[in-house]
Image 1: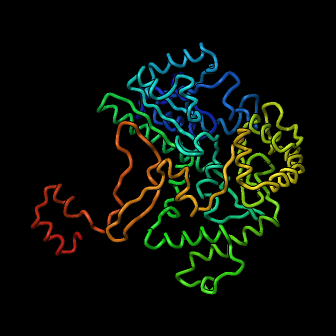
Image 2: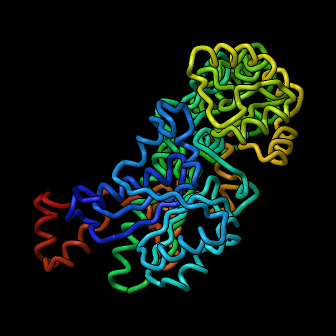
Image 3: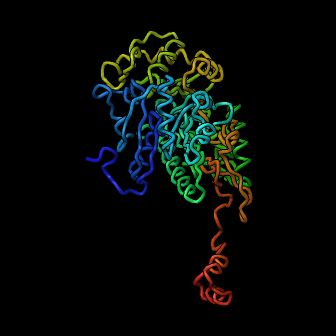
Length: 449
């Protein structure tokens, strides 16, 4: 049996990928490259990828890990030791692609930054996925899918409530999976460019940008029509009126979009106070919580993070000692639900801003729930240029998601808005060698417009 990859001759046959990622997004990207025939080498610490340790079905094996690491070869190396780091560098000297999901700054401390590695191996494609982007006030936060759904407006947009609180898309880790897909497509583009230039490049994506990019409809702002209603909505949720304006209540055209800000947001705030969140299948460490003035999400996907949250709240919960945590098991779920009122009561004691500060100081993954309208101009989105402004010939200024990657050596991201109907017919046909007279005849016959 071929030990490297059972399928030979794939589109990426001969490409070697060093996968130093864990959890979902990075490993999913590596799995996609393996499906294309790349030799993907999964690098794990001696204790294993932390995703192995969640809801284990056998020692060191979990369904989650199996689902995003198909087709890879695996090695276990302790990169915290000089010898382990030296081994990785030797692998990278002969590699085509490196996958990472370090927090900003960690790679440089390890000697594994893009600048350091490209100097050693100029052909290396350096692909990194972060939680919130490499710049901005939230860049250093740890992050997972739930937090990206909260911070991007994705959790809010369909207004699906569970006992009064917005409910995440939990059947699939949407931000994680799409971030992995976007990164894989960027890597393939960088490999193609390398065939022309001989040089690799840095490809960067994030969970937050992926979550924004898949929302092509809510993040489609025709500023002449949408800017004023958005501003009115933001003013409404900052200071909700006690009464709904008559025009809004009647569903008038000019104010219908604002009615959500007046009525539904006010109702949501009231339901937050009166309702008890059901959370995520008894998992007190991965769900939204009501605060004194809003909603904050926590996403602790390993017991190190869970213990930090437990200790910060002062709650006695022995289930997060050790490495394994199985909130779907009946006994643990029952115990978790019994503790839920303690978590809820603790979070209601402080404002969202206060909790974000305390959670950040304790290094607990967290994010505020943002409404779609709040995301357009949030500092983190602005710092990472995740929203693009374009001029449309018929509609004027548009704002929509920018392409979800950053590439260091080749231009990325189109600056053209969607074309008007037949906008480029003459130019494209002329490029194909069709004369102006023939184009005029085809237009007159209704064949082209």
